Length: 180
Ligand code: HEM
Ligand code: HEM
View (cartoon, rainbow, N blue to C red):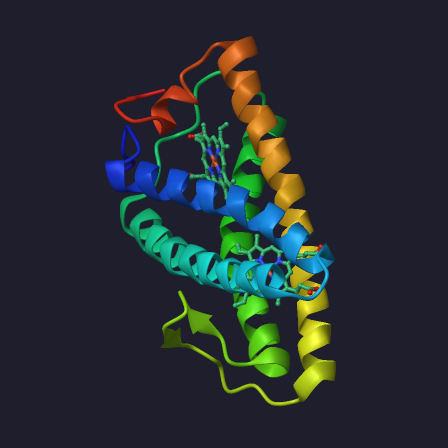
């Protein structure tokens, strides 16, 4: 049966993943551009650990989504906006899984070990060394910037719903928010 609202777990996962991505991207830009040194190395470690955390939470989120579904889009949207919403949500789900997997695979190939929060070794068995690692990380970078662009559109759409259409779309993703 189609639910009438997002479950609290869906909202919590949505916002924790969003916060982690808002932290991960500036960390990525800083670590890639800083001169070699302790700060650069620390930012790499935080980037990798936050990224792996996004992957774990995204998989949990997909399980909840598959078992519980999501409320229908608000009434009165033109067909192209309904299609755009469905396609962009699907692409966001795909990218929050793909981007960290690519980062994980690329780092495992070129620059092992991958350590989760400086403790748990999680390097994947991927051979090929630097050339393979760099190629995978290039795809990781392109996919990550695609995710950033899509998130910008997604936020613009959420604000449009809230401020221009004044419907319940944003409220129903907020704590305590109900049917839209
Ligand atoms: C949702 C999760 C992730 C996002 C949004 C993300 C985002 C990014 C972005 C935007 C860059 C490009 C930085 C630049 O070249 O200016 C980047 C690079 C990189 N990411 Fe990620 N990343 C994620 C997950 C991961 C994970 C899980 C790992 C490894 C375990 C990882 C490892 C790397 C590495 C090694 C680079 C290369 C930086 C360089 O060129 O020196 N990322 N990431
Ligand atoms: C930064 C990373 C973000 C990602 C990866 C993301 C991803 C998603 C996905 C996949 C959905 C579809 C949920 C489902 O149908 O199961 C969704 C819904 C939603 N998101 Fe985000 N989101 C992000 C940030 C934001 C931000 C910053 C806002 C608000 C300013 C926002 C507002 C919403 C709203 C209002 C919905 C509900 C749409 C509806 O029910 O029709 N999201 N988000």
